[in-house]
Length: 111
Image (tube, rainbow, N blue to C red; front, side):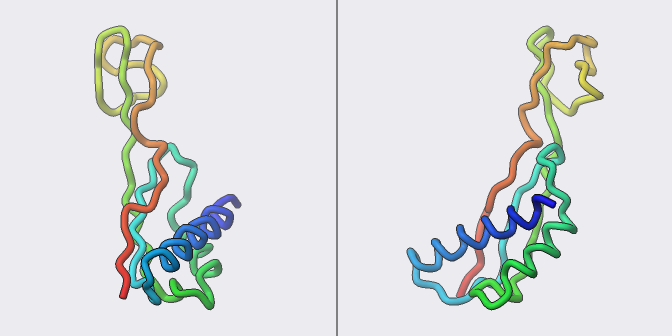
């Protein structure tokens, strides 16, 4: 369950920001997580509740925006959603994932 590690790492980021910016309470954490990032949003929410206990983020809302996968085909120039691991336009195999692996803090709402 790597979501617990991710939740603990989120707390490190939040605590560092709290020290640097002088806030004492986090109201909301907005995360962007790609569909190919390996993150299970519901599991991350549960793990975050555990990781945030007793911290400035205890009770904070965790909003997770899902970033859909996108690919680029070197063969035909297609940019868009994938269809398996072949280009949906030309059927070529020379595609690379250009979106969908993201996992980062978009913003914090604090007081």
